Image (cartoon, rainbow, N blue to C red):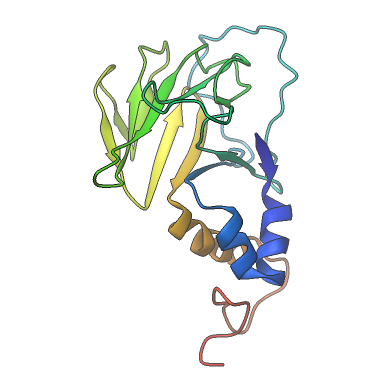
Length: 186
């Protein structure tokens, strides 16, 4: 499911505790590349996509969880271009089934694995070896083909909202925000 970042950010500023309760799983924040940045890959295919994409002003938030209730996590949470994935990323440089996420139940650590994609999966600038799990912690940079996303454990999502709003605010802010919507020291 694609959620609009602005909606979650607005809800967070109005009621941070409600967002903390409702977003209790990791998310991927898919941001549009800065203006003038060209795609890295030319190897792409289209399969009748509607191209639900982020804009510079409106990132998309993708929930890292199974789509169907009662589904087993044993197979992991798939990310890919086709609608049968748990996380659908409509981009021609993303493979039909590109990567899989899973949580280690005993430790709570999340992992990502490239599923043999054409354009690769990258974590913090390092190309992943297909089929090998890579641990994800509170926050990490991921790239699936040309799609740049930030993996955020639900605890780190709150701070990401504040950081993003501070970076993209139109007016100059004299005091930074905290997670309660109050100024620091206030």
